[in-house]
Figure 1 (cartoon, rainbow, N blue to C red):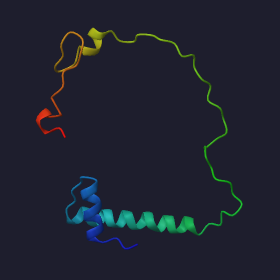
Figure 2 (cartoon, rainbow, N blue to C red; figure 1 turned 45 degrees about the horizontal axis):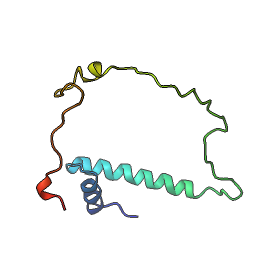
Figure 3 (cartoon, rainbow, N blue to C red; figure 1 turned 90 degrees about the vertical axis):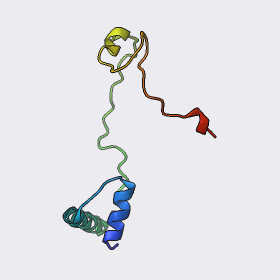
Figure 4 (cartoon, rainbow, N blue to C red; figure 1 turned 120 degrees about the horizontal axis):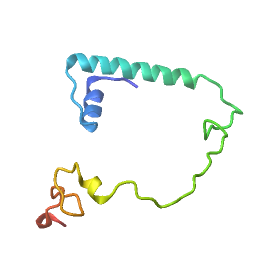
Length: 100
C-alpha cells in the first residue's frame, strides 16, 4: 500500500484532523513504519498456533452487586453549569422543526 498525500488527506478528513506540510511528512513516516511492522508480522508462520482470545487464563472474581448511593442529587449537581432542582440542563441539540 502506498501512502501518499491523498491518503493522508482522506484519513485526516475522516478523523477531523488537520496537518501542515511537515506534520504530513511525519504522519507518512509513522504510517510507513506501521505497515512495515505488519509486513514483518505477516512473515511469521503461525500454523498450529491457536488464536489468542484473552491475554491470560485467569478468572476475574465477581463482586457482589449491591445498590448504594455514592452521590446525592445535590452533590452531583453542585458543579453543573446549569441545572434545576433535580436535573442537568443542556443546550437543545435537536430542532423539532427539522425532524424527519
